[in-house]
Amino acid sequence: MLSKEQLIKSMLFEIRIIKHLGTKLQPGKLNWRPTPGQRSILELMQYLTTCGIVPALAAIKDNWDDAEALEKAAESVNHINFADAMDAQGRKLREVINAVPHADLLHKEAHMPWGAPCKLGEALVNMALKPLVAYRMQFFLYLKEAGRHDLGPAQCWVGVDPQPQKAE
Image 1 (cartoon, rainbow, N blue to C red):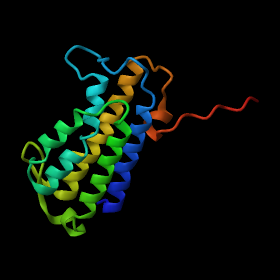
Image 2 (spheres, one colour; image 1 turned 90 degrees about the horizontal axis):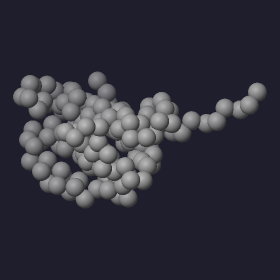
Image 3 (tube, helix red, strand yellow; image 1 turned 135 degrees about the vertical axis):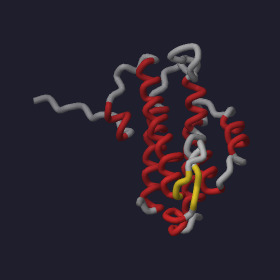
Image 4 (spheres, helix red, strand yellow; image 1 turned 90 degrees about the vertical axis):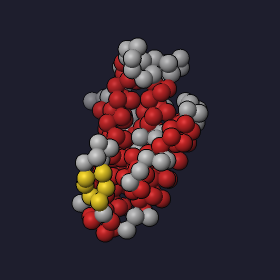
């Protein structure tokens, strides 16, 4: 099992990558969507600001009572305040996970959204960390499909721009 510190560090790493990808958005592309039934880039950005904290709180509290208010607040996220909203999610994740006794990660019963029982640590990995990873990848792919064909593995997996190769 991951320690609380390792789990938080991994979540914050994903948030840093997502914020980096947010700097790659081209002007005029906020409303771009792959197909009419899918989220727009803006809607995905708004969702990214809640996709870790909402399920983390649900796992810890064993209820979804915080979801509606957090999702409603995310509707005010735009390309200007996106990084701040991601930072706020990171701070809240750090706060709520640090408040959990380590023994609870290993022994406290929690439930997956479909009701399957698991331990709290497993729930936090599956319900909070994995969505940050998955939706980070979706964000990367949306940006590429919307015209940022220059984006590559360094931006997606590490959250950095590749360094130019020295001429030989």
